[in-house]
Length: 474
Image (tube, one colour):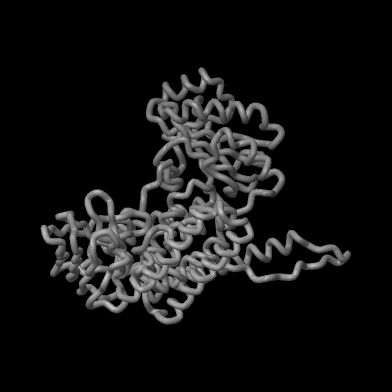
């Protein structure tokens, strides 16, 4: 199923990026420049955008706007053939960058912006070290391994010292936030726990290190800094995605919610970062294909949207999200489903609660659905082979208007399980179970509590085995 996106939030996220740019005046003066046009661009998360274009035959390019204000971040000016030079916007939006053709960054002089002047002070020193590293690499074959390793080590130490010195001298400069954010998390030395029998518990030791790592993953990231949103992806966004996609991949829902709330709380000093995190995390788990992640979406809506913290959204938009979350909350794993009753092909009524089985598979399906026509026979094949092993019964609910077509499909495919006509039922199951596509599958335990859902036929046996062994946790 392709879930509907949090459209109001997405539109808003793009809107505040566009509206954020107002009232700037930036001059770029390039001596001996042969190009007649420059593009002013910026980064946002993992994308680059063109913001403005300036034209000049003398190398004096003027970027102007009386209506737009620039967010803090790393920007760039570039030619149409792709040559570019990065600079920073750090509160100042009225300044001049003066350089010459052939070495834009190396010859750069700044007038009107101390943060930008400090930025190029660092860039020039860093580029000198990079040049030395390239020269050393070219001479590598003439050196012994020990000589080369020692010289490279010295250059790396000089580079680290350069970064630390800049952060110390200019702690409020956006570049300091960028340099800090790109530092790796250092897990401190920890003693290996010892078991009662005197053996070392390396598994517990690794777990303790992992807990520290995920808890301190963002220690070097100032989540109150708006400017990090407008930096190349390697600075913030790539590592941010890695956290959710890899570090938190196998975490429980409660753990994910704990860390999500912690991050959001740390961003409260930045309206834009707060909005980004709230939108991104909510959207991420709205769209997640992983079973059980809908709980995170529901909790995010309850904690932040229903409570009124997403006050930039229109009340009607918040109401829509809250209504969807409240509906989904009834369908979370661990929830008791209401008793569904429908007639079969012979007009004999059946209900879910009366089924005696360790597991009850409730399927909403339609023979008119292309995906159902392949999934249902595969599900039946699993059922016919494993119903006794797992003590399963199936309650297959038709959602199609064409009753004769439904009956014909049952006969043709030999679906010898409980087939009922959902067009006649004891309550509006379509609304309650949010059936907007088919097939939709819920696995219930003997007490009619949801224990799994939206399982593909090919994965059914693996899921049932995990359930039987009590290993499926959320």
